Image 1 (cartoon, helix red, strand yellow):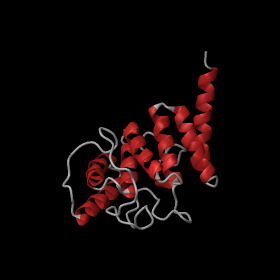
Image 2: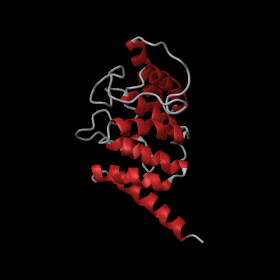
Image 3: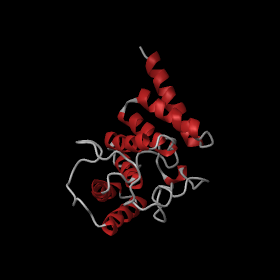
Length: 192
């Protein structure tokens, strides 16, 4: 994100996501490997699919896209994210998400690109799809919480950030984000 200093609590930047045990492929912008346990984007990972007008909306893709083409879209999107071009990445990753709506790795990359371009509600929709399919995914809870906070829904953000922080209390940026959102909520309650 360009408007947030690198490494701050509400950044999805790579400084906040150094590789850790059990989190293979979690470093945003990393192109070597897949976020979902080494599975390629074409692998059916249990998402419920696109929501009309929601996270997946947009162009129609062929009913049975070539898996190599979907993989190419995914890797191109990840490379664009790594190079600091989230808007271009979002376009390519949206195409991959339309072709493979059940791919968590594609959804997460798309959500990160949307977040980085200020499309917080769209990012929240994609992170929510991941959370619904995999309730123990701490990063998806974190991304959903940050997206909701940026969209102005601090109460809902606090719930998801609390879950992420409870799942991974060792990650300081999770607890920092939760603390900041709770402070925002408290200051708004005290405001005249």
